[in-house]
Length: 156
Image (cartoon, rainbow, N blue to C red; front, side, top):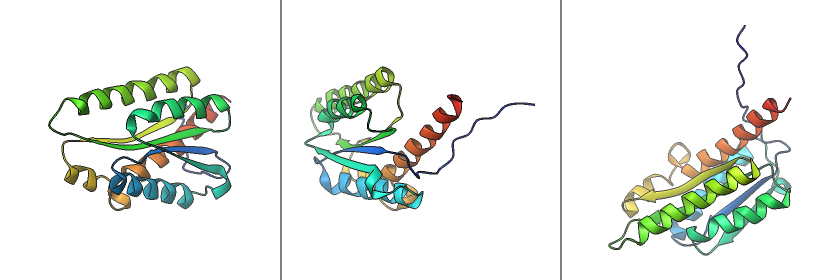
């Protein structure tokens, strides 16, 4: 018989840290609302969730590193919005935050979901931060919950 491991969406007792960028707050605030909704609707208690605000997406990996190294969290959720403009700044920030978060995942071997939007325009960002079905913050929270479950099953 094939052994199948699948994550469960049960956030009860799961300690989650959220790192959210203030830049483009009109988008990231909705991502945060979506993430919190996802966590709460799957059993997370307020006492098990910590939200840290940072100035922009570029600062997310440093705070994720600090939170991961603390041992206080089972998973992290990173939220931000990098919207393309007229300069190459978009590419630099997108690349730096992606690589930075990836390094933290590998260094600490912990689930860190990537809810950082990289869009060509504001409308795309708004579309991805809307209702539950289209809110990448909500999806990132569910990813974090599921990965904690998967990794705990692999450890048994």
